[in-house]
Length: 123
Image (cartoon, rainbow, N blue to C red):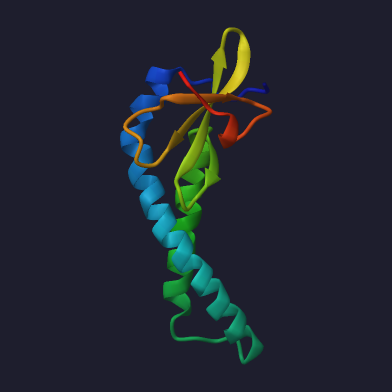
């Protein structure tokens, strides 16, 4: 691994009170951002101007802020709609992903770097 943070299970769990609300807001804003991008595409086919342009830019900027926050924590967002994330971790000297999904009380699963969600196993 190249200079990525490695999480222990307790460290990953300590981040959850901050991560969960970020994911909830991101999911909400991401869906809204998709609709905004569609409206912007429609507007660009006309004269490209809309009275909502500033509001749209603010909402899109918030999505970027939330994504930057997640990137800064050095975790992998796997699915926005379900809030599925992977934390880089180690298990018995092997690089793994500690796997958590929004709504789960704590990080309780892991999978190898080669496998995805389907390969996750209880810790």
